[in-house]
Image 1 (cartoon, rainbow, N blue to C red):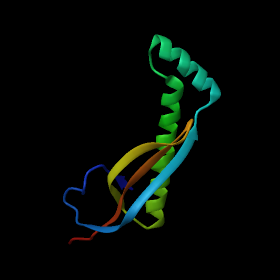
Image 2: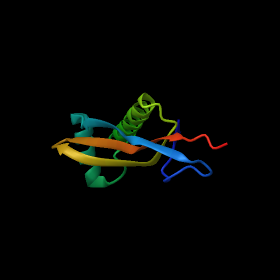
Image 3: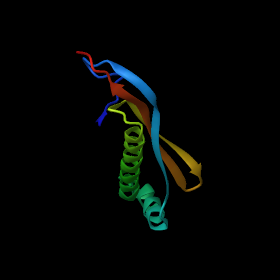
Image 4: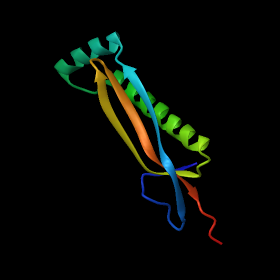
Length: 106
């Protein structure tokens, strides 16, 4: 599966199938929250949150690819990620793009 943030694939003619997406909602762990509060005083990376977002991004990405595979797509173009707070202490990470088939241009 080709996955790209560009609007197309150089040298390929594409047939648009559908918008595809994958998402996950994650909640903060109380231990991470306490550590983040302490880090806020002295500064520095909030490693627990960085790790949580890395895992969430991978999960959202994998779900988006699964969605495209289900549609028999060859690629996903114009891929984007976004986050939003769904409730206090929880955030959604969404990956989305356009599933396409590569046309056979002989």
